Image (cartoon, rainbow, N blue to C red; front, side):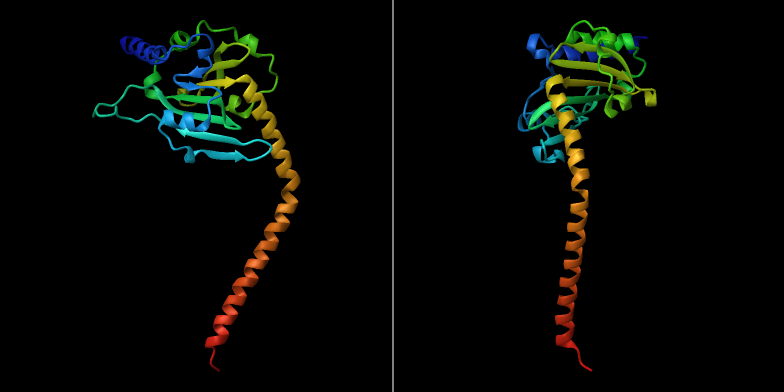
Length: 230
């Protein structure tokens, strides 16, 4: 019981240290929704070049992963940050979503009520989950995240707490509703474009492969002909 309460206090302190007010609630800690890749990578201490590009058109969709360092800077003591990793998603160089996974050992034993209490220190009172049922289409990410436990936000942003039965995983997803809608639309268009252009790309690939083979054989022919002795 004492360990559980300590875990709640630790998580609450980490969140409340970055307490959000008004428009500031459209963020997680110091990471602001709408921020660009360079600013987010600088805050995270991860090179912007480490970002993965998912699509280049009709919009640039990228992701960047961050894990907090295990040890506190300048100390041999391990830090107590409950975050295991954060995956940042960008739409045209604007931070549209953050998927925050918590460390299993640092959330072990915590109930849904414990987690809601801690997260509410940053985002205010939780909303009724029924308010989120207006969205009939559930994304693959949401489905994989597990069962939604609580929700915070307004018409501009959303914070949803998930708990998965797999390894008792705890996750929150912080989303800019406007940017995420644009990103989803762009993703669907990119998939359609990929499918439409697939035959042409395959023809181009085969043509290039044939040409590469021809050039390789020609190079071998010239070298072998010059050195061939009957």
